[in-house]
Length: 221
Image 1 (tube, rainbow, N blue to C red):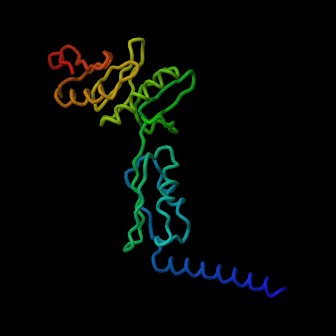
Image 2: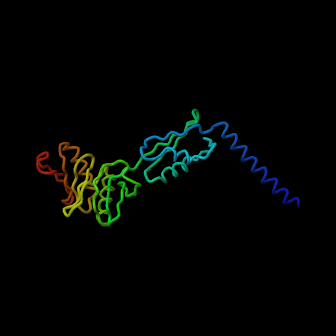
Image 3: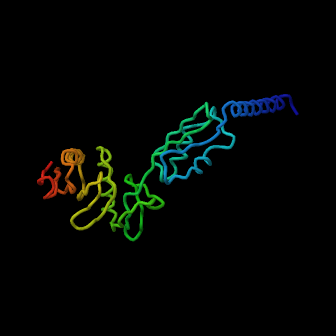
């Protein structure tokens, strides 16, 4: 064996030994002693444990990588990982998606979150099944996205018919059809705040929010 090859092998052996020593020291000084998952009802805590390698250390834990692994689960909309060096516990704070739509789309049943993510099931949500075509599904998801961008959340799609759609938004019945603008969404939020007794709000008139007759004297926004 040439001296050149021996020097390469020796360098590799030193590098491997150094790496192992660093890992051992890191584990002994700051081992991960536990994982706490918060804010979840559908995401299984066991998945978080599986995402962390055995004998993991807080010193070598890649928090962003762990967050990406957790967020790969369709129930998880976002995750934030923090480690506590005193206790050795890694906390995974999860923001979960929830089903807002139980849809039968051209013969295929889908449970969908407001951002359009297809979920493994309804997650215990008591939703009415609604038949939609692809265009209608697009309208509903755009509606949910516009609401969210303007500070409101669609709770569920209740009905779809020739007159439009009926959805629950922040506990109120909202009727809409086609595209809903950002201006309408902002006006809807203002009307909800100024007319807390209004149970039904209609967005089918362009750029307007109509409070159903009999609720707060039929006010408009």
